[in-house]
Every structure is written in C-alpha cells, then in structure tokens.
Figure 1 (cartoon, one colour):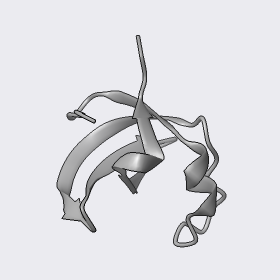
Figure 2: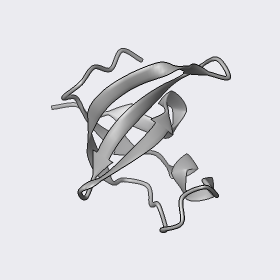
Figure 3: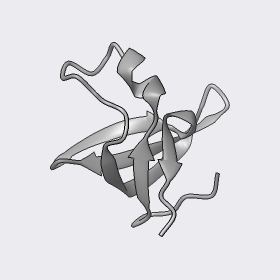
Figure 4: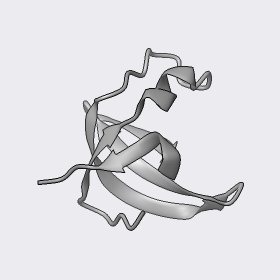
Amino acid sequence: MDLKEGDLVITLPKVEKIKAIVENMEPNKIGVITSVSSKFAGKEVYGVLIDGKEYFLFSDEIEKMEI
C-alpha cells in the first residue's frame, strides 16, 4: 500500500483486537496520515490522526479511502 502524509484512510475490522489502545478502537473510523514511520515486523507503521488523537497503526489495519 502506498500511503503518504495527508492521505485519508479508514480503519479495518482488525483494529478491534488491538489491546494496547485503551479506548475502544472501531472499524470504519476515518483518519488522516500524519507520518510514515519505519517498518516493524516487516510492516509499515503509520501515524494516523483520528478524532484529534494520533494512533500508530500497521498497514494491514488501515485502508486508503477512495475519493
């Protein structure tokens, strides 16, 4: 997946299983890419701003929105 800063993304159902996030993270939340971090465990990590909070999500937890 080719994402860059400013791209709109939507969270996928896989985010419901993230135990490190205290709040309930739900699928279908819309966010914007704020940063592209390095790879971890072979996957890209992205900073995603959702509802005024930044989350760091793997590439398989988000999908680029088609506009």
